[in-house]
Amino acid sequence: MAPALTWLQPGFNPAPSPVLSSEQGFIMNVAHQRAASGAPQAPDASATRTKRSMVLAAALGNGLEFFDFTVYSFFSALIGQLFFPAHDALTSLMMSLATFGVGFVVRPLGGVLIGAYADRAGRKPALILTVLLMALGTGLIGLAPTYAQIGLAAPALIVLGRLLQGFSAGGEVGAATTLLMEAGREGQRGRLVSWQMASQGGAALAGALIAVLLSKSLTHEQLVAWGWRVPFLVGLAIGPIGFWMRSRLDDTLPAHAVSASQTNGSASRAAAPVRRKLPLRQIVAGTMLVIGATGTMYTIVFFLPAFLALTLHMPTAAASASGGIAGVVLLVGSPLAGRLADRVKRRKPMLAAGSLVSLALLFPAFAAIAAWPSVGTVLAVVLVLVGLMTLTSPAGFLMMLEALRPEVRATSLGIIYAVGVTLFGGFAQLAVGALWRATGSFYAPAWYVFGCGIISLAGLMLFEEKTATAH
Image: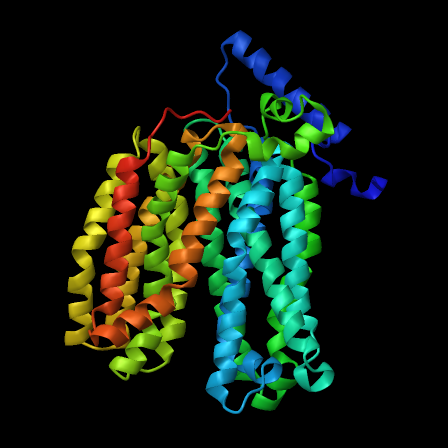
């Protein structure tokens, strides 16, 4: 293997730079001297800066995923027109949306393969790989020639870009969230893990703002010619930044987890992720657990405004407004919820209480929309339901991570998140639409979210909560 690619080799764990090692050694010596003298130990400013850099680097890829999700959704009709020409606009749009859905289908594969790579080679090389793949997929979409220029190769490039995005996103959450949890000591892990959810909100909000700004400032001809590409090129530019930031991270994979996968030569190492016993009960229960939040997010935020435009003829402004309020709630509320998760000794009661309150408010919320159909009512419903989801999400992730063994932690969480999001997030619109057509009920979205919540509660009961341990 070429020397330039040694960071992708299993077991490669780059040593920190000499400057960083000396700095860490100095900090440890000072702390030791203070402990020996009985002096109080204050938080070190350099260590705080290092922690912040780690949070930013780890959350960057997950944020890029939601940024792409938002801008693709916003420009899906235009992408359908340019890359999937058909006899009518609706068919072009459906083909564009189907291509977008392809990214969800490959997520579980990315969760398994990249997660296993993170558990064998380290969190750091896995995160470098995911951000490069994600940037490559984003770049393919943003730079692809149109159907009028190269024919069938154009939609093929869009599909390939979505496959790369989905594959990398499937492994991103498991590896990045695991690194954040392992980097923190007990009492601060929830706060660190929460920035994964906060990055989703911030990136979705940024994507919506950029898309709206382009739509307001450019003519339709300019949007068609080049304007729609701008957000994807912004995402492409994040790739080199993410590579640089992640290449400077310290890995958190415990040494005993590395040695466990490298005891019998290269052949054994290649097969180790398959032979290692995954905690099947925890994976099944964890997948059930994330379904509740997934169903809420993809139904209430991404599908409900369009559904209300069809049923109650509400203005399309509700779509961008609800996405914006959800982004703000995730961005601001997640760190606060992470601090709360650090304060509770057991997470199960907190998660159960949040789920029960959400289920109790669900149908009254839809009744309020039916009685007072307005953008303000919709925003209030989104604020309450997404707020409750945000309140419990860091605790849920933290409970799962602490219960998983380090040598299978990234793989297990990758599978849990990717399968849950693929089945109950990627197909949420199709499922709710089918339920609505079959019943004609205005409460079809509520029934779908309610069903997801019941499954989530069952998963919570099945999941074995364990004592907090990072390594």
